[in-house]
Image: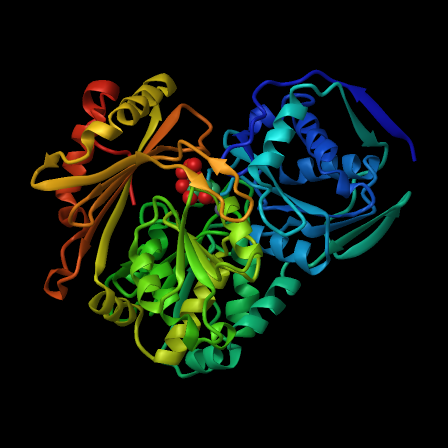
Length: 545
Ligand code: G1P
Ligand code: ZN
């Protein structure tokens, strides 16, 4: 087979963010742009030469074109075995699982997660290493460095590979396998959870589910697992057909974007008992009870407190971890259970070492991501199955389970306010100003709340001792309230400031306040401290979750 060496010159903006390289579709369509970045990955991930690659994406616009290019580059770069998802589909959790199961050298996931798709939308590439998890910062820094000096890329001269049906093809020394994207993953779920019990719950006639796949990758997974294997009624999975532009929607499973699901769950006494939605690539989820929202930080805490009841976790938990901005609800549970609780920077990659070193079993982020040591990614369908299994054991509603949890551990009111599309320089200056004040803020009082601690979060990985700095400004108050400020690392336009607000309330009589009302003091203090109005001219956040 003929291998073409194409001369190219570097792009200066291929620095991966929180989760791989994410850009507008039209940027990826610039000639050589995709090829340069993929070649940079092959140059760094030398184990791919002679090894196996898992390749697929969330079905968004440009997914299939990018896959065809990457196949030709993989063949030219000596990959011996490529496993592709049928129709180019793989969820992020499925890729993580396949890498581990088949001992692949790595996986490429084509997704911009919850960002909108379509020709005007976003595209992205994430590389996961042999442990199944997102490549670490050292790796992504090397890829970036490589992208800045790249002079040529390699491409095999071959036809496009048909992706429509499972099949095998041999191209030169490379075996290309198109596989059903769901079956390996579904098998893993059957192994972890008590499908018999969940099936009995559905067949009792007392319980219904609504899962909103948001026209993204989880449609086929949810249909197979919830409807076919667990017996949820037909129609339990809505928006199940993956579409290139997510039917014009925003595949972000939160109360704002998963409107259809929220409408199903609210109101009538015939509403489903449990609702869930998933994002573009299937790693995030939102969980709802009937007329009831469980925030992701609470989800992690409830799971931690109850994991021992599930057969898959009956041996107990090694420890838990949460990202810095995630509420400290799980910390309370860990304290009671006497297990370690780690606070990490934002991004799933920081959980990898803790999972590999068996220091933790469960971990999560406030941004609708929870996972366990079964793979090295957050996992939306897994999380929904965890809740289904828990409901099947307890025979209580989502609301009852959550309220009982608050009564035992106290409630952490929690919200995230996002200010989007800020001028990047102004946003940097805003953060710099807070950073400069961390020392002087200590001991000061705002609206009756005394600041006990304030810093710019820095993380030393306990396993490899690497240090990650400037991860967000943490402001802790005497009454266990907390504010965190950080800039998003996944945006593709301007800067997004994320303000994370939290208040702890131990008194069950005070567990029924509307979240934004409960957090009013923190919201005002955050606005004052950040000088949002004077610096960025913003009164109100764009998104409140
Ligand atoms: C966001 C989330 C973060 C998550 C990441 C990738 O990153 O906040 O928790 O790990 O997407 O899905 P951010 O835009 O805040 O950098
Ligand atoms: Zn995602």
